[in-house]
Amino acid sequence: MTTMFNKTRRDAPAHEERSPRSRLTDLDAGYPGKPVLHQLSLDIPALAMTALVGPNGSGKSTLLGVLAGVIPATSGELWHSEGRSPAFVPQRAAVGDSLPLTVRRAVEMGRWGRRGLWRRQTRQDRSAVDSAMDRMAVGDLATRQLGELSGGQRQRVLIAQGLAQQSDLLLLDEPTTGLDPESRERIATLLKELVADGTTVVQATHDLEAARAADACLLLADGRLVGQGPPEETLTDAVLARAWRPA
View (spheres, rainbow, N blue to C red):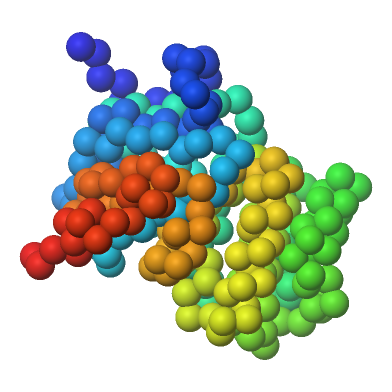
């Protein structure tokens, strides 16, 4: 059997009841000298909210990086359906508070992948940035520095940066961690609206309540998939115990 290394196919998969937006088959990935993901085979359902759940160190961020195309697979296969390249929103901690960035400039960075770093903004770029900022209700913060914002405001700016990429696949790494309940609820509502409008959303989360509100769940432990499917089937006490078993 031929193994396909670090390859993204664009042909259609076999018919399924619900078409996947992305699919991993027997995929391994990690970093030099440090394998993280092992033999993952899973589907990301299209036009749905998928919660990626698991203990710290289980491989959630690495899986998002693979889906985003910023971490290569070492073996196996990654398939994406037709659509624009995924938009990836990292954890807030990955963006330094000391960076001299205004809110608008941070959101504009979402357009770099389409137009390049040094090319001037087009009318389409400005429209995409304006639309993303309006959608995340951060337009009134445009001239503020990122470091001056509250945690909830800053997270909405980072999501707006992802939206400015105008992808139909949005990947978020712990988008509500460390936020107050009001901010968590606001972001959860905005993400549900994005799905309703035709965006496939995948979010890594430690919040089991948020995961149970998703359309589908992926449960990781030690870089392996231990649960996949609807939340009511995946997030049972028995399955969660397998993921959080003592080392």
